[in-house]
Amino acid sequence: MEQDTVKVVKRTTGLVLILAVVAGLIGILLWFFGSPWGASGAQKAVQAYVAQTYPDQGLEVEKAEYRLSTRGYQARVEDKEKEDVFFTVSVKDGQILSDSYETDVIEKGNTVRRLEEAYTALVQEKLEEAELSVAVRPSVRLDSASLEKVQLGMAFSLEDTLQYSLMLEGAADEPTLDTAAQLLGEVYSQMDAKGYGFSSYGVQLEKDGAAIVVAQVAPAQIKGGNLARILQLALEGDVESGVYISIREPEDGFGEESEAES
Image (tube, rainbow, N blue to C red; front, side, top):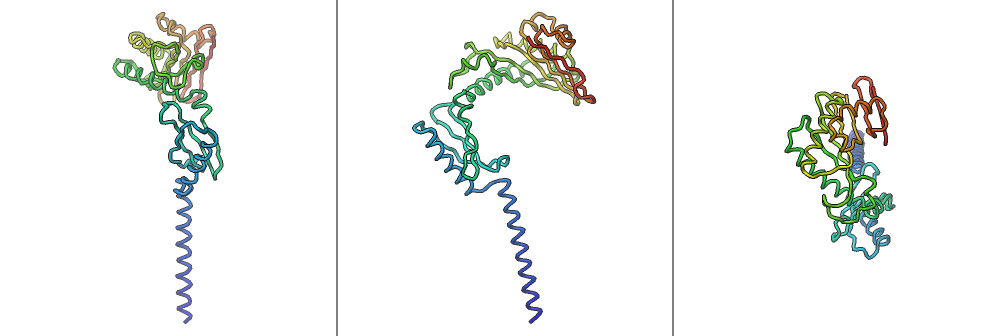
C-alpha cells in the first residue's frame, strides 16, 4: 500500500513538473511571438480607435502583428484608393501606444520616402552600368528646403523643382580623401550625363574599421576638377567650402575630424 502511495506521489510530481515546463515554454513563446487572441483583440482595439479618430475616411485596418520591442501589437491602417495614405497604430493591453498618421500622412512622410526610393532606384541602375573605382550603394534624400513643396500622392518626376542630395556608401581598398575625390568625380560624370541633378554629394568609404566621410560637396566643386585640394583644405579647417569631413582610424577611433558649414 505504501509503495502504491509512493508511486502515485512520484507520478503526480512528474506530471506537475511536466506541466510547469510546458507552461514555461508557452510563456516564452507568448513573450517572443504574441498570441492569436492577443492579435485579434489588438486589431479590434485599433479598428475602434480608427473609427473614432478618423471617421468617414474609408480606412482599412490590416491584421495586427506582435512587436517584441513593446510587447504589444502594431497594425497598418490604409486607404486602398490613395497610394500614400497609410500609417501604423501600436496598441498594448487594449491601450493605444502610438499613431504615425501625423508624420506619415499629414507631414507627407510616405510621399517623401517614395520619391526618395524612386530616385535612388534610378541612380542605382545607372551606377551598376558604370565602371566605378569603388562599388557603392546610393541613397537619395530630399532636401529640407523642398519638403514644403511636396504634395501628398505626387508622382516622381525629374522635371519638378524638388532638390535632392546624393550619398554613397562602399568599401574601398584605401578610404582616403583622394579616393573619395576620384569616386565623387566619377559619379558626378555619370549623373550629369544622365540628367540627374543633386544639390550636394557625399560619400562614406570603409575598410577594416577605418572610414572616411565626405558630405555637403556642391556639384560645382566636383565639376571644377580641383576637388582633392578642396577636401584637403576642408580637413585643415577651411570653413568657407561648406564641406564636412570625418576620418576614423581603426585603432584610435576618430583620429581626425573636420567640419565646415556654409
